[in-house]
Image (cartoon, rainbow, N blue to C red; front, side, top):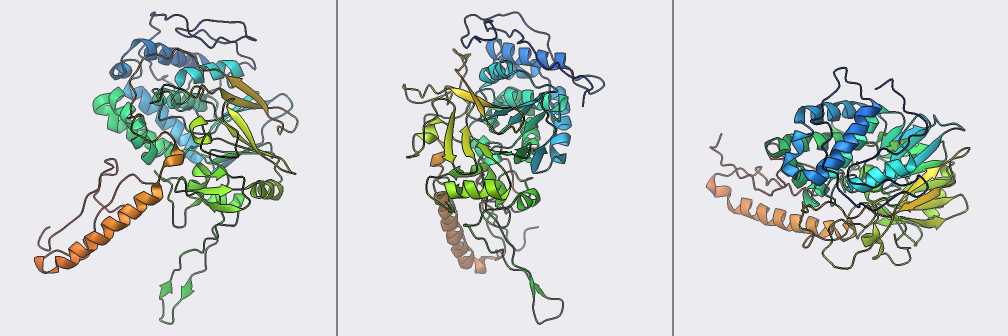
Length: 498
């Protein structure tokens, strides 16, 4: 979007409240707070083209505001009009990108930085960008999703990365994570964060963010050798051809036969419909849910991911099959933090911010997590104290990952959590979506009984209930319900009611 191109090497810029240190010894501890206000409020460039200085100022403003302003004052530094311009510009770019973006425009002078889950930990993101070097002509960034939820600055984190995307659309790639969804953001804090920060404009801002989430691509292939995605691999969904009945012009459409033990192809990935608020758990469009929610396993083969209630588990043999079939040598996925990994026997913990999960003949599978000292809000006194990490891929093949672990920027600014972290489950691993679905079926069956009993009372049989729990699998919404409410309601309609 901009003709400005940042230098190949960018020196760290000072940020509010952080001490400086030599490049080879980056500081990870905040020792003071600078109350000097940066230039605010931010304004959108008249020509619509972002500059490097504009993004530097954005970083400084977000950092300063997080330390010096209460959340409801956020519009005083980023007015809604600027938010609208940024999200609209970024959305236009993102929605034009394919499901799987091929990053082939890299050469002997280029490096590619891959980043895992960030979860609204703004100050760690700022450190990561300075430590790795800012995006530039010769430094490509691939972010593997989960920008929001749990942390207190999901909005700032997401908007900062959108700004980099607008500035360098072919050097910054933002993939979707499972938390970039209506369901997760309604449970883990992002929706409430937005509503508090933008008050009466909060619903508008939240809807725009959801629309932007829908445009985020699902995967990348780097230099033809490396596959990255938030969750990982996905199944094949071969469709059964439609059959014609004996009656003329009568067509019988059969549900696709889904073989959960068959890996999907890159062609199938390219055809999946990603523009959904919540990836469905059943039906024809399962690939987005697989890519965002699946996990590796130590057991061979493919199996349903019963712990999560959506997506798959895949074994080392599937990693080998996928790498070999598509001439790849490395898979980099994210999706699992220290809380999830402690419940996964056979897998290494996330102490260093990364794990090597499968080592097979053709290559490796890596899990990358970039949010240190995660989660920000924790009910127990004992914390995981994990490091975050990012990966650097270098020429000529970009297939030999260099791991860079880093500590959290502490102490974090004091702020209240936007979700009930003492009551909500600690890990996505615990989401019992299957039980929720069984509950919905029970309600549905009971409601049908009510309708049968109400035949003589003037109610229409076809006035079925409306269900909207924000569940990824409740995808067939009825007209007239509030898609942002997350509430369950029944749509009784008397015969004489117009």
